[in-house]
Length: 360
Image (cartoon, rainbow, N blue to C red; front, side):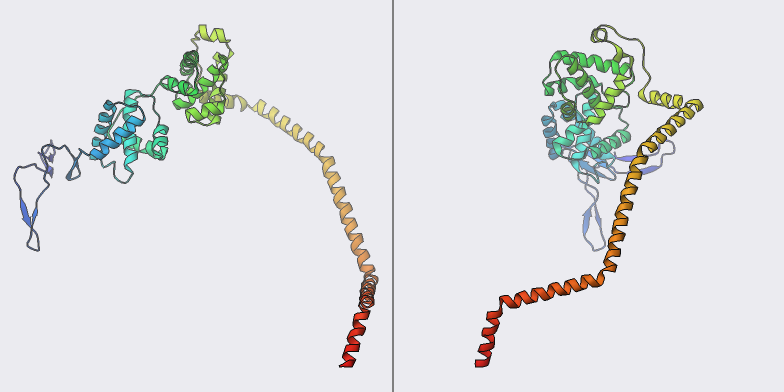
């Protein structure tokens, strides 16, 4: 009936009853206004605050359908995403942001539940919107609606990336084995699935002579080159990296490695012993002294050159001060010679001007 009340005491907190009759109230200017809101039986409504909003929005359904078709999703994904959208309306999660962010988030929830190989970056590339805003909307919806989204196995994305890189099925099988070994060695936890797939495909391609560059793989899986190199470095620190190719394909090590973070902490603890600190300090001091001895002749040579330049400048300035009068006389003499040359060259013109003036 649209009534919200307390179960323990029976206090009515909110009353939005649905009735079949129409009621009108008179306002201050004497006119009548319809009380409440007309709700059609043929439509579905969602309660938002104190009003009801129709959820039979064809525009939203068509937008979800177009996004799902572009990503290769079925009609079941469309209906499931639209149901999540109707639930998000009840918590006012669509207000204050673009509709595309909310629709992308609800479709991604469906993809995670159905375990389809789609990433947030796919929605960002398709709709040309910010991937981080999609992620924030996704987290807000899952937290408010208490949705338990399962973790995705990185091996689900491998067929998609293998198809884009035009690699064989042997590479796919070997990459799956590498990913499963990475799970055993605690490299998968806390990592995005696309960079794990990128590292496994780089290794599998090199083993089976279907080499793909790290930059090419990074472009396909939408990660940076530095991230893939870091995953490769973490793989190299495990016991599986010491096995040959045949041993890796036929044997399965039962030993589990520590997470990469714990390995870094252990390395830091082993370095911080007092004896090693003193040895490291002495080594750095000796290295600095050797460097100072190497650079000392260069500094002396530069100082000598600077002194020579300074002395030459001082001697030149002294010479100028001493011979200042001679220099001025030379300048006057040169100017007199230039004037004389000018008079000799223009002597005829000057005489003609004098005769002309006298005639006038």
